Image (cartoon, rainbow, N blue to C red):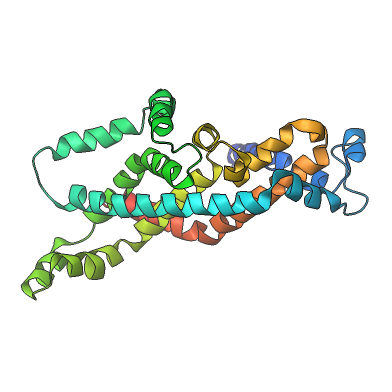
Length: 276
């Protein structure tokens, strides 16, 4: 009995240590966002003496967050719509239909998830330059959508596998056409899958840096992420308080978004994982 108790205590200590490792950097960001640079240098782990809000206004202006958030929203929404539309139809076909080459397609999507995007940067940049698409947010959203597509298709497929095909057969016997079957019967059955894929894609697109920094050149095309990273240069390089405030500005919206939909994501992944 004592041995089990010691094991339980040890496990809780390990969990507490991991929680501390994860939350301590966030603690530093939050408290230092409300402190002037001099106080941060003096004691970075102390609580602020008073709420120094100038960091937030300075970070907002310097990083151009007004423009950056607008660009990020355009990029994220366009990417999510592309991925949801394409993965829904692809996942439906791969999960419910039998056709020649289905196994090859599944292998292709599985393989595509392992290929690093860095391999395609040079040819992609050449195509974008020739088509004069450098700085085009909507064109970049197609690239980010393509990167997220393999995972999204495989996730959607697992949800469609669990939909009873008797529903489709009954609807066909009742005279429903393909559009009615898909949009009124099949797609509503996999609503958790749509939510799961949407959250994953939105998080990836919001935090995306490599593709955005390569193809969205010019400050007017900067996303919020690129705007924040611009704080690392120029005369404001050493203003740590402003950097911390900027990181909070960019993290809080996506954190609230994720926490508000976390339950649906967990339920969706759990439901989809047992439907093969």
